[in-house]
Each structure stands twice: as C-alpha cells, then as structure tokens.
Length: 292
Picture 1 (cartoon, rainbow, N blue to C red):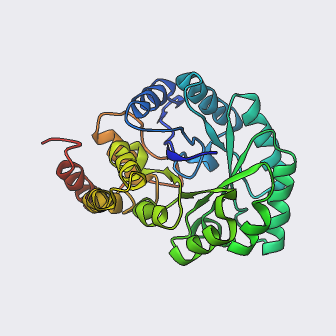
Picture 2: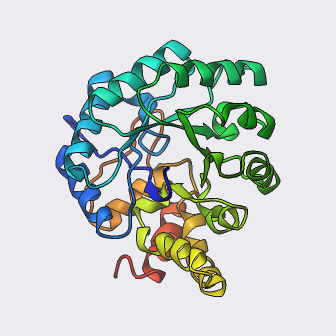
C-alpha cells in the first residue's frame, strides 16, 4: 500500500514552539523533489518531546500542505498500548492516512507482548499501520516470526525495518512475501533493502537528499541496478555524516546550512559538536547542497 520515498520529517522549532511556516515550506519543497508521502512525529520529528497540542499542529500543517496529493503517515506509537490506540485515532481525525507504530520502548515486552500490543492497536485503528522495528531505540527487537504472525491483519500494511540486520530483513521478506511493504529504516541500507524485496524507505535523509534517494529506487525498480549502485555509493558518505550524532541532530543542522530555519533540537538532545559539524559541512559541499 505504501511504497516509495517517505521523508521522516523534522519538526521545525522556534521560541514559540512549532514553526508551521517552515514545516509547510519543507513539505512543499520535498513534494517537488520525489517524496511519495511524509512521516511526521517519528524519531526524526522528536515526537517524545512534543506536547499533545504540538503533535496535533504538526499533523494538521502537513495534511494542509499536501492538500490530498499524497499521504501523511503520522507517528502514533508509544510504550503504552492504550495511548498508541488513542493517538492513532486522533491522527485519523486530523486527516492522516496511515500510522507508524513503534515497538514499545523501556517496557521491554516479550515477542508475545509485541504481538498482542500491535494486534490491539490494529484491531482498534481506523488507519492502516506500518510497524516500526528499531531495537537501537527501544531495546527490543521484533523477530521475523512475530512479524509473520502480524502481517495477515488487514490493518497492518508495512514495516519500517531499522534493525540494521540484512539477514533479518531477508527473513521478513521470505516469511511475509507481498503481504506487507518492507520499508528501509536505515538510510545507508536503502539499496540493500530493495535488493531483499523492500518497497521503499521512511528516511531521515529524505529531508536533505530526496532526489538522490528517489533516483536509487527508480533506477533499481527499472532494472538499472548498476546506476542505482553508482548513486548509492555517491551519496553514502553524506548519509553516514547525517548520522554522525544522534538523529535528528545532524539532519537539522544540514537543513539549517541549506537555508531552512528548522531551529535546533530540543533537550535532552543538544546541537552538534563543532568537529562533527565540520565533517557534515564538508559532505554537504561535496554534494553541492551548500557553497562556500
């Protein structure tokens, strides 16, 4: 159902809170550069630091900006099953067309707990769901056999796989086939994920280099694998630089350097170290995204 490039949007912040003008500008610009939809309120969007009112404002702004032209898939998952259900319903009320639901963090549920959590959300969701497996953030890895148990549910249509484990991604593809869309969750592994049956990516780097990432997908799906490899290798150093510190610190810095006044990150995240900023700026210059 969801295939292609879905930038995991940053949340532009200023002294008053959410900068809706910058968010709207970013969404409109990314639409012209290959985005197939957007994912606000994920990891890149600093969702855990936003209030309920701010989350609503982000979704409303994105929905208004796309004006029905492409889907908004809102991050609605928390470490509370009940809260995840309520946030998913709220996102639907605000016009989202899908929900990204992360594995519960801190609780460290068993595989059975993960299964029951996602089934409960899916059973009560007015939206199609994309599962979000990112063990580096949650301390729990959703195994392929658990995904296989979940994927027959009509409301579960995809998985953002950010385990960084290509063996695991391959096993999900074998077990689930075309029942769900596998979407890359690690930007440096977009091309490898496509080779294992992936259908696209939910991408933090999609804020910065959407055209290149979309070209990787388009050339690969067109059978021009050598061209896809060439683009992947060209953009790979920048992709690594965008994760030189905890996401979205570097992505926001890159956007600032490119003229988008997205502001800084919110505590407990802090601005980039100067030594890392220099590395990022160098890669942005090499890629032609900034001058000087």
